[in-house]
Length: 309
Image (cartoon, rainbow, N blue to C red; front, side, top):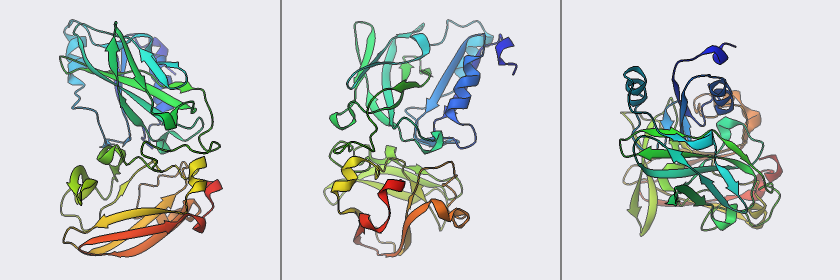
């Protein structure tokens, strides 16, 4: 209600999947700020838990604002420009040269912010314009996109999100992530995140001749949970699949594992100890014994209604 009268410099570090502070509401308030404004949006991140493109520190913005510093980088116009069928472009400005930039794209026009998945594409610069192109499976798909820049001083800044016109990914056959997977395997650990009450550490490693995601307790937790929003079972390509294959390796440790498939919703599904409160949003689960070695699991897609996802 009072954002329009704020003349001070304002910077917000936003988690794109925050279930407390939804990104759309955060951006709406920031747009009403009359003074200098910046946003740093962390993809696939919920309230500080999840992936971040690099170490970021809002103290750089505060020092610059309070001590009349040389300035802070920005994305010109605060938004990326879609260049159909799969391209995006944007310009950046600031007191120091821009070192790197990334595009983040989330497929689907109408989804709860907390349930979105953000696919990362490193951008390239040509003639003062940053450009990025989505892989073929995401071309002409409706969704939401934004970009983040990093300058040579270590300062980060993001654009606001922009709606991307295109086809509904749930209605078109053949849509899938690079490599044909129904979830984003190519991005490795960046496609996953920890849960607040059962924190874990996620990182990539080579095992069994392929890239895998390793999950370890953050402390001495006996129960850990990790999740990804990248599963596209409602995509047209899912109807062509008989099931999902998941490979698990206990790495010498045995125990129990529960695999859940949840419908995207406003429900905070990242509360594994409270999921019994939300049975309507759980489409499928399987409780299995995790062996110390390699285990292969196949989930048959016909066991639950894909049209509900």
